[in-house]
Image (cartoon, rainbow, N blue to C red; front, top):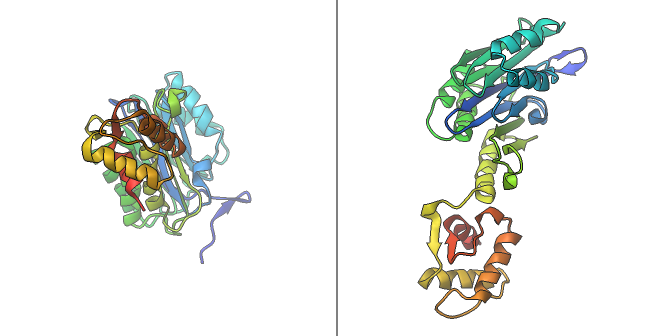
Length: 293
């Protein structure tokens, strides 16, 4: 088995990553995969309304907070990159991707990064990787981020296409997805919109997709088309399901107080806080969850 290359006694954060922004939605983030334990603790750095960075290879994690500070001051990502590596004696071993909130981007690959190593920067994204199966892996990142859909889905599609092109030539171990959006975190109290990590897994990208689906279920808001009226057969089914789950639902043709209290207790116990309402409706996604064995 090939060993992980090291420099100064530290393992290389050999990986592929994509930093990208959705200017219209105000979302900015990073997705990364690596044959490295808990890559999400090292590579991604994001600040809502400012920018996103990936620092890898022989990662200098000081690049993250420094770079975001300079982006917030209005510097172009390429200027930030130049400033970051200027006085770094190990700059030729570093790899970095940067995008700002307006879509300006830059990528850097030092000459001492282990092959294949390279990156592509374009409007709204920067894609890069090292110890890869080949340049087609980076092409896969670009292809994925240029698909349609929400930013989180496109970031994961980028990882998927990159892995299908060969990925990290040592294999897979961990992955992370971090998307920031102003006041989109839990309860609207912070900007941590999506922050998911798979630290050690045989199929980290697929596991990340599963976690994203759960994140949307638990932290998403009820869509207008998912508001089902609590009347007739739906009301009867909800009461039956509540009793099955150990809650004392009410009776009758109308949505009564006993049923409402039982349903509220179920919602809050199962962590569907953001989908609860006093209105006589139930979220379609929660009802589907209740139906599971």
